[in-house]
Length: 284
Image 1 (cartoon, rainbow, N blue to C red):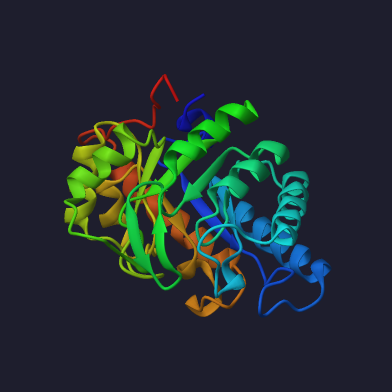
Image 2 (cartoon, helix red, strand yellow):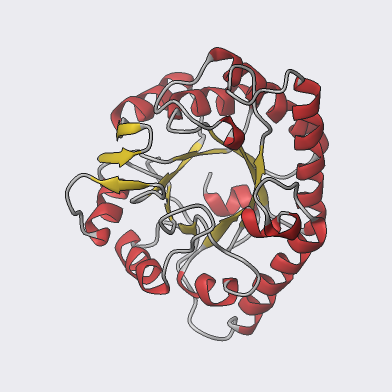
């Protein structure tokens, strides 16, 4: 299975469902029903607006542990994903913050989700949670043990972090794909809501050599026509919220506006040079 098969689009739009604080997080409100209701509302809004997939994040659990989350978080996210699968027909992915790729893979395998996002798959990043080391070797072996085909989308030089040393972006992309076996790479700006530059996206596309490159932050309906010219897809959240405020729920009108802007741009480029497809490596 490849990403194009998963998303049914050559340039997928992945909308993010930011879960309300989960059990054991500092801002946990005490009602899992409220968490599920909000997640269902946001998933429905994203689906109605025309996105190609949804990724579920424990975004409001900050401050995050740098690695393993509490089992209650895993349980709650598993429940949410199962509820969303009963609500929408879109592919669903997981991002367990800050970097619990094992839990994300476990939830995806058990709930039959299609992909995970891993903030630090390889290398060492200095973050507000401390030093985070990539564990690609463990994650890939765990995926094999689970016997699943969940795809791994990995951030390269992830936002809210600084690498130890000064890795070249081209080298970082190549190592994430060739040495860590990521199925796709994600390029973000320095923080939530900050887009990557077109120049960096072009570098990443060249280095990825046909493996999909996703815009990971900062996309909105005004800049997506420019950004998508140097990317295969986009993960979008902040600009889809009411009034563009991160704490607000998803606004279906803003979703539709974003989708229309991106699709119109791609349509106008259709007669130009084709970008690399979302075809995946055959050995992943």
